[in-house]
Image 1 (cartoon, helix red, strand yellow):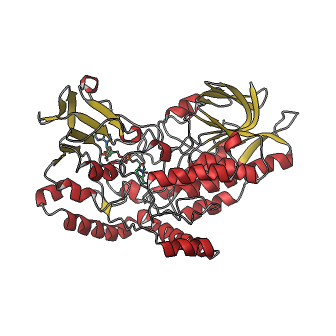
Image 2 (tube, rainbow, N blue to C red):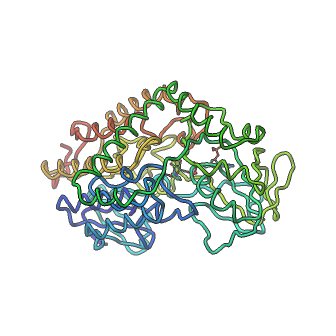
Image 3 (tube, rainbow, N blue to C red):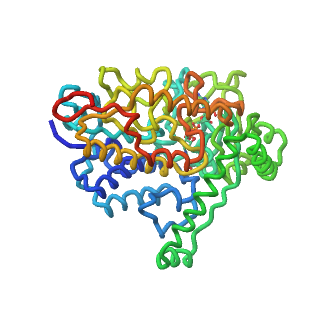
Length: 490
Ligand code: NAP
């Protein structure tokens, strides 16, 4: 058994934020368990052509590690991944990394008041477990009848097959979400034919991206505070846009802009009708692209809106009986967000898994701690997602909250801490009440934000600022604690 004070699972934005902040606070006895051989999380795994962030780079980075060298206002995957690797070096996290360690079961041991975390390279015993596996890490592949019989190549956008040359091939793309709209325009000029299977059209706005000039780089490097000022301005403009999601009538104005974008980019009324959403903008993630819609108007592209019935060796059959021939199928079908496999591997005080505890819906106090799971902290857990600004902000404020909990435990001689059932219930009730009037609840769509019960257990129903202010305060009364040594409740 390998002893450590704190085990962090996952080395993406969340896990690395936790590692860096712990180090800065003088905690040096921790490990970061990462199944891959590199850090980077979603920015390591998603390498599809055109992969980039749709949140401005100045904001989509750590508040404590601004990067004056971003090449574009919206950076690409390779640059963001390099940024994260740079942070590991800069903040001395490398000695704490345990790469190539896949976590199996993680169980709370009541007797020792510690977590036993099994990995394929040994078992770790940790006082505190920080789970930072990310909501968008497990690709979701729909169970389409006959898929196993397909004679060609099949892959998911988050597991791009760079060894598979698409030139001249008949390619089918299933899904039209944030990932697909980025890679479709990149592969369209290369492939022979492209059939895009669309179940629900997304609302798309123009993407105001531009290279950052040499002069700007010089200013960011030489003028203290200049980049921070730009970041702050982006922060407030972005956060104010939450108003449209909270009050859907405001979003209807934004929808007019998206309608104009579609009209300008797609001349053919028949194709435009297929691409026009019937729900209120914001109900599903609003996508940013200047080249997706034009790609769909090209002569080698067919947009299919009939539902898929089955896959045969030679292609995909829709419910109207038409077989759409394909050599390659690419799934842009998203991720297991509300049913991530990691939930089945974490066992709390009574031996139940998080998956069992979170059936039928995920609930956590401050999106971070869960009643019945002592000394467990989740980064980007339930109701911490954002559709309008950077989730890095959320992860950072959760890390600050975890540090406050650790300080509280140290100062008060506490061995184990978990939110009380009442505090968690009150918190979740407040979230649900605020969610009721939002566009996600009233916009008339089905989205991955909603779980199988129809509850939105993924998004934070408000301004990022509201979440950050809330998490700034550590409310000891909302936690149940077990004292050190005596093992008696406080
Ligand atoms: P997604 O948004 O969940 O989109 C999945 C797509 O697949 C949707 O069009 C969905 O249709 C379709 N689909 C799912 N199951 C299907 C089935 N059985 N048959 C037919 N179609 C099916 O996934 P994503 O595009 O990978 O994006 C996931 C999230 O990653 C985004 O929402 C965003 O948060 C993040 N992301 C961010 C960026 C960025 O720039 N920051 C880029 C990429 C991804 P329905 O709409 O009908 O469900």
